[in-house]
Amino acid sequence: MSYEIFGKDMTELHSDSKSKNLNLNASEESGSSEETALNNRLEGRNSILEAIRAGRTIDKIFIQDGLRDNTISQIISKVKGTGAVISFVKKQRLDEMSETGHHQGVIAQTSAYEYSEIDDIFALAKERHEPPFIIILDEIEDPHNLGAIIRTANICGAHGVIIPKHRATGLTATVVRASAGAINFTPVVKVTNIAKTIDELKGRGLWFACADMEGDVMYKCNLTGAIGLVIGNEGSGVSRLVKEKCDYIVSIPMKGDIESLNASVATGILAYEIVRQRDK
Image (cartoon, rainbow, N blue to C red; front, side, top):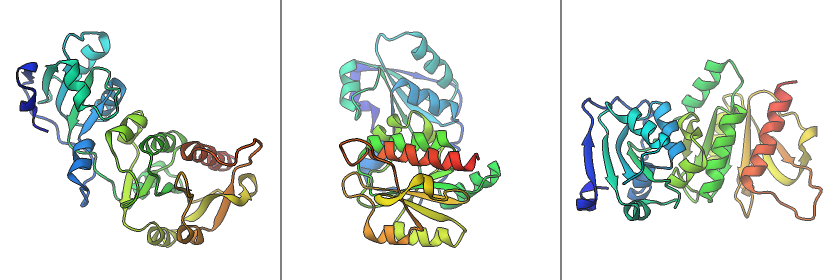
C-alpha cells in the first residue's frame, strides 16, 4: 500500500540509519496479493511492540495524530534509527486501513510474515533438547481461532504449527493480533496436503493424536514423546482422510449440555494434557 494516498493528512519523519535485515524464514508461497498485503500489516500496540522485540523490521509506522502517551513514545523511540518511516495520520485514515477494527491508534507496515519450513520446527525442538511437539490444523477458517492457537502453541512449548494452503485462514492481521505476539516466536508452516504431511512426519518419528468427540478420553491416551496434535475445522471437525492417518483419536471429557468446544479452547486443553504427561 503506497503511503501517498494519505496526501496532506500525514507528516513523514525519516530515521537516519538503514533497516536491519529481517530474521525470518523465507517462503516459496506468497499467496494472494490481498493476503500478502495483510501479512505486511501489524495493528495494535502490543503486536507492534512484540514484533520489535523479536527483531522484526518495521518499514513504515502510522500513528494517530495527537497521540503522545508512554506506549506510543516507546514505539517511536524503538523504531527511530532503524530506517522506518514514521507518519502521523488522522484517526479516520487508520480506521480505513484497519482490518481488525482495534488498531489502538497505531498500524505498522513490515516485510510480510513469511511461512517457516518443517525443518525449522525440528531445529527448534533440537535446540531445546525436546521431542518434537507440533500442532496441525485441518482447515481452521476463523482467524481469531488461528491466532489464539498460535498463542497457545507458544505458551505450552509446542515447536510449531502446520496449516493447509487451501480452505483455511492464513496469517492475516487479525491472526497476528489474536496471537498476542506469539507469531514472532512460533514457526508456522503452510503445506499443500495435510494427510501427506502427516505421512512424512511419521517417517521422522512422530505419532499423531486427532481430536474427536468419539475418541478415547485424553487421560487414557499416551501423549508423550514426539507427537503431533491434530485439530479440525470449527464445524465439521477433522476430515476423514486426515483422521485415518492418526494413531490416536482423543476426546475431551464433556460434562455439560452442549457437545463441542471452540477449536482454540479444545487445542489448549489437549495441548496441556500433552504438557502434563511430558512433565510426569
